[in-house]
Amino acid sequence: MSTTETIVTPGKGPRHRVLGRVAKRRVEPIYYVFLIPTLILFTLAITVPAITGIVFSFTDSIGIGTWSFNGLTNYIAMMSDPAILQSYLFTFGFSIATVIVVNVVAFLLAVGLTARIRFRTALRTIFVIPMVISGIIIAYVFNFLFSNSVPAVGNAFGIGWLKDSLLSNPDLAWVAIVAVTAWQAIPGTLLIYIAGLLSVPGDVYEAADIDGANRFQQLTRITLPLVAGYVVINMILGFKNFLNAYDIIVGLTNGGPGTATRSVAMTIIAGFNGGDYSYQMANATIFFIVAVIISLLQLSLTRGRNTF
Image 1 (tube, one colour):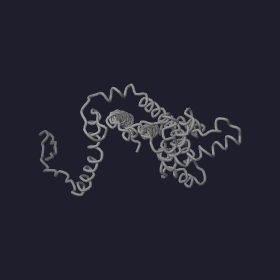
Image 2 (cartoon, one colour; image 1 turned 135 degrees about the vertical axis):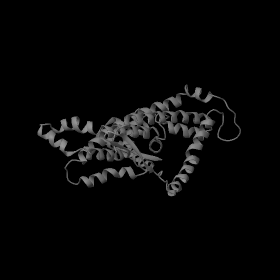
Image 3 (cartoon, one colour; image 1 turned 90 degrees about the horizontal axis):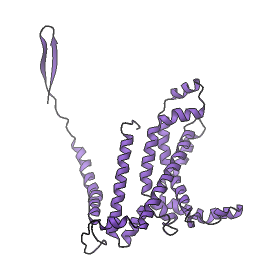
Image 4 (tube, one colour; image 1 turned 60 degrees about the horizontal axis):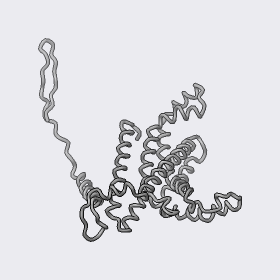
């Protein structure tokens, strides 16, 4: 590719001089060493199974043996299946409630852990610990607490609704699931909020102090607007992650009592094990489309934000 230089001489007009050819940027071979194996593994582990699953969602396959195409039969049946509709209702309700709890608590903790307090570094480390513990282990620990320790406290203090395990109450089991999921998810959200709060210039708060703004006014009129991008990212990413909730729910209630806390992921996996392979593949395809829509929403909300 050639480039030119324009020379303007008084009385003679512009002249163009060819400076030479600019060499194309050479791609280092090491890039392909990392790219090609990753691309092959991603294709074999993600793309091919996904396409295969979508194809089987238009069949009557039970996972093994012969099968035939049946068109949109599985998708039409889903629309009137109360078990699937209940799983979607629970999953979205649980995700919305958990996102709100996680972001409110994580933001308040981040504000406190970025203030000028003693031992804030040690406290940050302590609050991050739940993030590195397996979800199923956390679920079994809290299962014991909700089944034994909490009822004991309820009986000791005469609190009626705590005398029985929350996990056995179809109206309150979701509260326990939200609490445990939030306990594990708060540290990751907390770290993002801490990064956002530390990026706010200190001069802004000094100017606000001079103008007489109190701490609450600084929080609502300075901090929140300046970290709005972080809030959006945490909300969207958290919602997407909670839609896939599985291990904590399995460890706490296994979808019970009855099917009151069965998520979409649990419904799909239970169908695979029960012979409803193509039917649950249709369910998984719809769920995938929902996840794609949320991802596109995330991109549209975060486009142009210099958050990270």
